[in-house]
Image 1 (tube, one colour):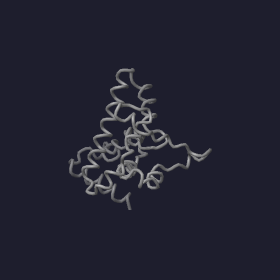
Image 2 (cartoon, rainbow, N blue to C red):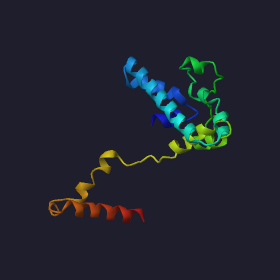
Image 3 (cartoon, rainbow, N blue to C red):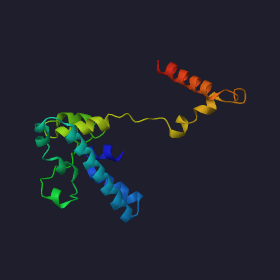
Image 4 (cartoon, rainbow, N blue to C red):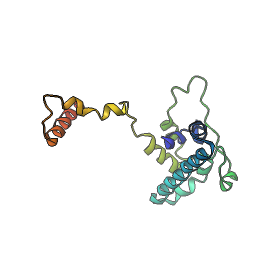
Length: 164
């Protein structure tokens, strides 16, 4: 979730810094924020390593400025900072981060690929306890002697039928 939040150009690391400072004690919040930065940098490095085009690598000179609106490291502070994206009044509700990344692909080629992959992961609306409570709907006092394979077949069949 943190990576998705950072890739929203309206918030970047500001949202993570704000939320983590509310959730964790100060010292742990700093560690968690640095962990998010480290993991983002590692992910970015993987995308760069997997890209075969050197032009894509060169076009992302401003990638550090995107993530460091608050300026975390000395190396990144010297770069020009890309500010937070500010929506027009009352258009924040209709803002689509994927569309923003699509329109800024030439400026942030590698980051836009990361954003496309991360932000396109569907978020489930099913409560977690509901997702794991299928057993109660399959097994009851009359069907408690079913073999595990039969229970699995019932659950899979139900999923297939609902998906159609």
